Length: 197
Image (cartoon, rainbow, N blue to C red):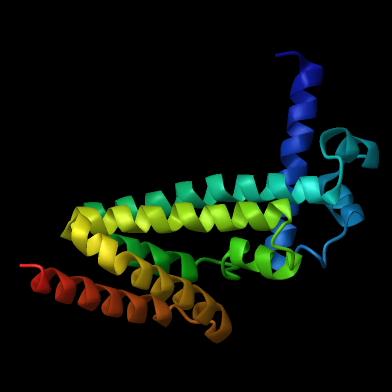
């Protein structure tokens, strides 16, 4: 790869990472393009060479956030699985790790949907698709733990518990909602499993 191409790629990545940090900490609408340009240390033209608009940058940031978050969440889960937890317990332990991480400000995808306030916005659509993928992962974890029938019955309710825990964790500035959601989810999965025997 040429040095010029590397610099272009580095500049784009720097803009995405800067925007992701600022959007998450302060909000998508509160952070202007000029602030991102200044903190990423790029020229305005550089930004517009990579992104046709702020909306284009928002979508790139959400895609980057999904990759970053999924990788981090998987690492947290793996650590708990190695410590002896099953995958469902490890999921909720990882959720608690996230709630306790520095700068936690909830789910960037929920925040984006609220801020963008337009279900047709590409950022809103991507955020909704992210949630579908996240809930599918959760259903697969329940399937591994308790079987497909139990997963089919309980996954929607467990997903709601998780989403409620995320919002409550932000509002209360506490990681306790992860424990409450875990206890309710495990009880629901266990009860449903017994009924199916």
